[in-house]
Structures are given as structure tokens and as C-alpha cells.
Length: 498
Image 1 (cartoon, rainbow, N blue to C red):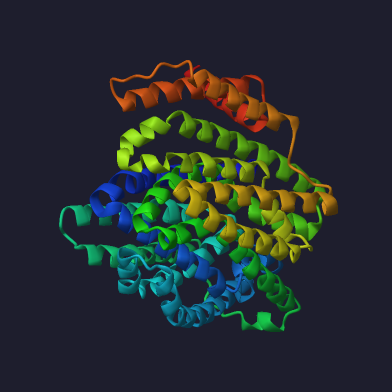
Image 2 (image 1 turned 45 degrees about the horizontal axis):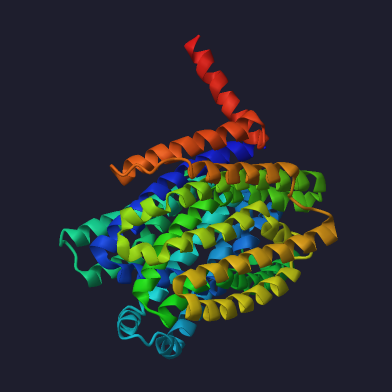
């Protein structure tokens, strides 16, 4: 657990720095200086490319981490594991690029609004660029995570890439580049992150050029192929569940509504940042624990990390809920239409964090094939509910539909894990943490609105609620890891003073 804390904190710092930069980009500068339509389109492009990336990688993202312990040997360049995965992905990118080109007609037909169709048709080729760069970046991220080196990959994805986007927004605002150049460079910006990861892997002596084609003759190849085959479809199902809303809104409405939705979904995504940061460390540990069949370690890790990430998520959710009016004040009245998107998506993300790393558990278990059935079911449900809810309630309906399917998929997976392995992450402390969050929402109603300036209201309101929530969590030891960490910091501070 000590290693998890150290690496998690390191990754968390970069993720929260990236969060600040991302907030400035997506919530303030991008909609105002470039336009919410362009924001909606660029996010659509990234999410659609991300969906195709799952096919191009042949589902090997999880396989990289799961099977790496069987090849790990630095002196032998890990059996050419990195080179093998690179060759596999390059083939996948070429194959998927062909599919993207063939799919241009049907995709254009889906986005029939004149403005939406213009963006899609003009910049369609950038999908392939974004696909390739994302695919290679994920390869290096997962490889370095398997080596327990997640902090630098987190920096390049969450901080450096967003700083690059910030630079492009400013260049466009000051007239240095035009809109066409902005969109093209926005897609190409990931090339710098890929290059940075390559340099880092070389610096730590883990950039191995051995192709590893001998893996094809090992007994593990069949397992890797089987696992990846199921994983690619299961992961596509998961991606559809969580991202289909961003793809469907422009089709059923237009990219301007998509831009508004992206802004509020960014606020909701903050809830999962602690969960995502810890996942980069938990993943290789769980993979190794499954290899050793150490179910005691798996259960302990499952329960403690779920409580920790849910506790952090509830504090963030409460912070969003109590500042909805202030968020509208920051964004402008034209964004009021989407303010409850953050609430519905936030509820879905809280359910996800409360269930811990159940998705990783089933993916790394011998029962990983069942994950495909769960994801296929929920993907179908997501598409149907999003279509109905968007037609009826607009972008708020999309958020409600997505939250519903996130909750359902977690229920399915959790029930399956408990039946087969008698594992669940829930505890009485979770109920108490939820109660603490509910109490904070009630106390917020008693705090008068500071009309002088919304920034002052955010600071005062958020400070009071954070102190109250933190006092309950630490004072009552509702989340022991947070309490222990707090008192350790206090002890270090007093020791330095004396």
C-alpha cells in the first residue's frame, strides 16, 4: 500500500495540475475565444478516434499490463514485449485507417446539420492522425505503468497535452494562426506527448527495440490473443457506454450543444480523477496478484481503494453541486441549459468510484470473457436510452441516460464478482461518508449567497464545506487512509518546527 500511495500521490499531483489547465481551456478560453461549436467538434473527433483506437490496438491495452509480469526481464529486454506490441499496433492502425476511410459516407450521413457536416467533411482526415497518435501514446502509457512508472505518462497526457492546447488557443486568439490551422494543430499536438514518452522510456533504459516476434511461438501468445479478442469488444462496449453521448448529441442536435455538454461533462469527470490516478498503480498490482492467486491482497486492495476514491469523489461532487450558479456565472447564461448535466453525470461517476476497480478485477480474472456480455448489453442500452432521452430532454437527457447505464453496468459486474469470488468493496464507512456528503449539502443551504462577486462566494462556500467534510472524514476516521495521511503530515510539520 505504501508504493500505491507514493505513486498515486505523484500521479494525482499531475492530474490536478492538468485539471486546472483543462478547466481554463475547456470552461473559459475555448468556448469564448474559439467557439463552443469548435470545442464540440474537436472533442467529437478525439472521442471517435478513441473509439477506433480500441479496434486498432486489438484490445491490447489491458493485455499489456496483464501479461507483462510473464515477460518482465530487463536484461532480456522483456522478451521484446514493447516491440511486439508496437508492431501489432502499427498493423492495427493501418487496418483501422482503411475502415475510417470507408466509413466516411455513413458518418457524414449521420451528421446532417449543415454546420456539423461542414466540420466533419472538412477535417475528416484528422481522425486518422488522432487515431495513430492516441494509439501509440496509450501503448507507451500502459507499458510504463506496467513498469510502475505512471507519473511521467500522466504528466504528458494530463498536463503537457493541455498546456499545448492552451498555447494553441492563445495563438488563435492573437491571430497568429487561423481556425483551419488551429484544428489541424490541435489534432497533431499529441505527437509531442508521444515523443516525450519515447524520450522518457529511453532515459530510464526501458526503450527496447527488439521486435519480440518470438512471442508468437510462446504458450502465452494464445492467451494474449484470446484475452485481447474479448477485451477489444468489451472495451468498445465500455467506451460506448461512457462516450456515446458526446457522439450522439451533434448527430441529433449540433456541435454547439455538444460543446456545452463537453464543458459540463468536464466538471463531472473531475470526480473520477482520484480513481483514474490510482488505477495506473493498482492495475499492475492486481495483475500480479491474480497471477499469484493472492485473493487476500486483491480483496484488501479492492475495498480500501474503493473507499478512498469514493470519499474524494463525494467531496468533489458536493463542491460542484453547491457551486452550480457560480459555474453559470463563469461560463455565461447561454450555458445555463446544461448545468444539470454535471449533476447527473456526477451521480453516475460516484456510482463508478463506489464500486472500486471491479472492471479491472473481472478483466484480469479467468472469467474475463463474461465482461464482453456485460459491456455489449450496456452499450446497446446506452445507445437506446441516449436516443430517447436526447430527443425528449436534450443534453440533460443525455447525461441522465449515461448515468443510468454507468450504474447498471457496475451493478452487473459487481453481482458477477460476488457470485464467483465473494468479493465486494462496500463497507459501513461508505454509508457514513455518503451521509457526511449529504450533511454538507444541507449545511450549504444555510450559507448566504455573497452577491458581491461569484469568485468570493465560491471561495467562502467551498472552504466552509471542505473544512466540514474533512473534519468528519478525519475526525471520525471514516476513511482511515485519509486520516492517517493527514496526521502524518501534521506530525511532520510539528517535528520540523521543533
